[in-house]
Amino acid sequence: MSSKLFSPLQIKSITLKNRITISPMCQYSAQDGFANDWHLVHLGSRASGGAGLIIQEATSVSPEGRISPEDLGLWKNEQIEKMQQINQFIISQKSVPGIQLAHAGRKASAASPWNGSRKLDATQGGWDTVAPSAVAYHDNEKSPVALDKTGIQKVVCDFQLATKRAVEAGFQVLEIHAAHGYLLHQFLSPLSNFRTDAYGGTFENRIRLTLEVVESVQSEWPDNLPLFVRISATDWAEGGWNLEESVQLSKILKEKGVDLIDVSSGGLVSHQQIPLGPNYQVPFAESIKNETGILTGAVGLITDAVQAEKIVATGKADLVLFARESLRNPNLGLTFAHDLNADIQWPEQYERAKI
Image 1 (cartoon, rainbow, N blue to C red):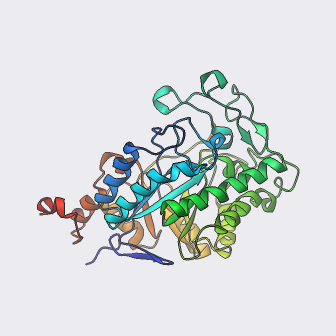
Image 2: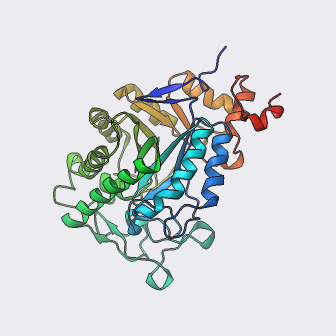
Image 3: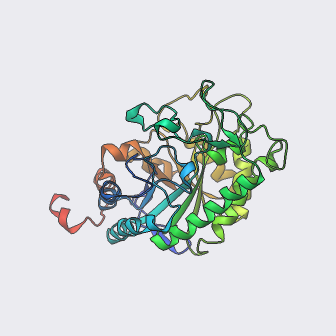
């Protein structure tokens, strides 16, 4: 019996050779937003390792949108060149290069994880953060600046200009990051958005910025290339963003021309209660897929080939995104093909290890 995980998936003009996607994972290894050889090896090895789609980590659309000072960015043209090199290698391995464009909002200006993830002030290389409302992620942190209309327009423009650079860099899939408690998610959730203007209060107002960003991205992103949006299906906190709203938003995004919803969860508030376990987020992807008809990607403690195969074979999602498991095993695609007895093309340099 053939493997569904290793069947191709066509989205617009792009055909993924399999349903294995490398999830965007921050490497905290850039300087002034510039990619370097670490990113080439990190992303390139997962392409030679057999994954069909490689999504570059959360790439900030502005300096103030970085999670940490070591985040990747696409806020200036000089940052394009190295990404072009990385993407050319990914394509040479018959994988598809993708990028996640992001703005961290109130979760910006933090130290890298191995430096404690603490909030940085100006003396430590940090900066003032922005958000829908002047409410910090942690009570003991300096409050972010509530964005005014001009600030919101800048965010929308920054996404548009970063998209233009992403096209020049040769990316073939673009994902808008509206999950994990970052800026667009902060606008979506009533736990972080206390605005009383056109961007707060009702569901229609809270999704407004996300829709404006989608429209600005589409003004630069080619119509024939796939556009994804990553959302947190629930805040895992009372009174927060929830699955019902995620389904509503996904319906609207589908109508607006978005091709796939990358379905994660959580990240907005420090008091979230997440019941961790294998496949714990897969039901969200399944619900959104079933209720809207849009393609979905599943994430969350998916660690082996049989588990991933079952998710796509039973129609719970259209592709599976791997994060930590791909850090443990860069050759995820090759390993899973072996586990499922799927006959795939290996890099010529590795073929002698195929059998």
